[in-house]
Picture 1 (cartoon, helix red, strand yellow):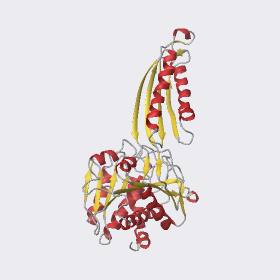
Picture 2 (cartoon, rainbow, N blue to C red; picture 1 turned 30 degrees about the vertical axis):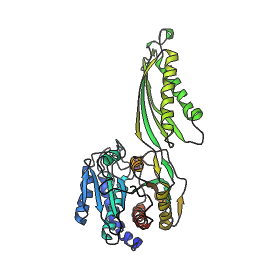
Picture 3 (tube, rainbow, N blue to C red; picture 1 turned 90 degrees about the vertical axis):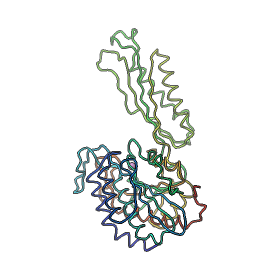
Picture 4 (spheres, rainbow, N blue to C red; picture 1 turned 45 degrees about the vertical axis):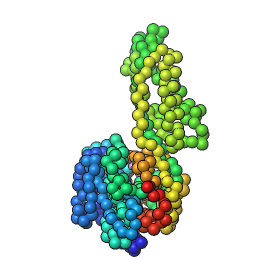
Length: 397
Ligand code: NI
């Protein structure tokens, strides 16, 4: 399709300019007002039809010809509650808020893709919907967008998304069929014992001791209950109890996160967490209150759409496609992929020589902006290949 690379190279300065503007003015989930307005201004200027959904989300539609197939491209656009520590002329101007995950880059890539496809709409063999999604980090914007009907009218056959990824070097793409990112669940547990004098323990039920045993026993879920060939994590990130050295604590508060790829583990892990907490509390005479919340399901890629992305990646980046790239981090792209077949992939963005290799969510996170053009090229080439492929590929009818 088209003279892709040379044209996208001409677009590169604009991609960098948009990304830096968004980086200067980051906004948290569902508060992306300026971000949404920035996207809308450009779509309006270019003449691309769009509508606003769930407050700050934007859906741009580029109608093509030849086929009635519809491909969606999704980009998230929210930032994180982190104080930026980088000293650049495009550093965050908003205290305590930073684009520390690269969603500024995702938005710029999606804008560039919309612009490019709009310029070439006469050659486009199907319709592309570009979904600018709010609140990926929290509390999740994908599900409300789906509930608002963004995958209907016209009905979307398949979806693509990407994540700029500093765990991979620039010039690589990580993609695999099946589970690419994990499900995420969070739980809070309050254990109640009976407080008392630090020197008279037999009159008490020590919430610190009970809590410590719960933390230890929970480790057996991954080590003893799950097939070692499956990956899962049970992390207790918070344990608060007690306030004085000579006082036995009345309560202990534990909070943790659960991650897994295999959707069949959902029930097992949740059940074991509660069984263990109940069993340990019972044997000490303590009580508990457990609040266990399911957040995002695993990101699961469709095999046919993954093959398409792998083939395009091989011709786009010429260097390396990382075939078994996966992470137990989570993403609400998973809700889209549960609804329509699609593929989410990682776009390597680290450049250690330039110091652009801090991890995601770090106050010094930044990436090599060369990745912006690569992202547009990937989406444009994938779009062309999707509409040129046999119509049975991922027809979600
Ligand atoms: Ni992210």
